[in-house]
Image 1 (cartoon, rainbow, N blue to C red):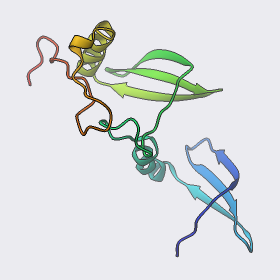
Image 2 (cartoon, rainbow, N blue to C red):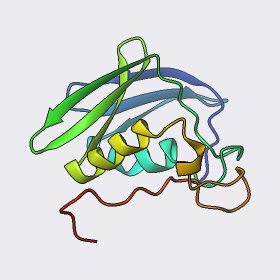
Image 3 (cartoon, helix red, strand yellow):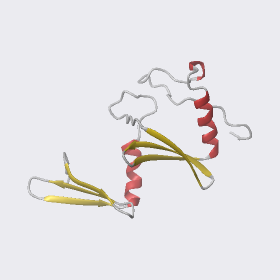
Image 4 (cartoon, one colour):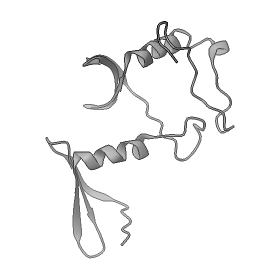
Amino acid sequence: MKTVISKLTNVSTHADGSLTLGFASSKENHTIELKPEVMDQLYVPLLGSRPDDLNSPLSRKIKPVGLRRFRFGNDVGMSFLVGQNVSLHLIMDRSLAAALQKLLETFDDQSTWNVQTPGSGANAVAQVPAPPGDKV
């Protein structure tokens, strides 16, 4: 059975990380509760975009209003504030953090970019050499 939901009547999150969605059909109200392990399966399709086409209708464009950095065990991360009390957290190992630092240092230098026009099928992810000491 396929149900197309065009309007949610209720959305809430719970302390255990689950998400409850309420919606109405023509005959009755329905509630779906998604457990954290199911939510993990949804993150990539909900937030994902093809790296080579920023103009695609499937492209997700999130404009943060604030940034924060943090340490998570041996990894590091960035939090992007995307709404009131809502952040998107990205956790990366230190080699990616070093690559990010290099990208930021050369951000305005177009000669360091490895990109082509969005939609051209080119890989739009800038390539950065591995940090010293890392083996490729």
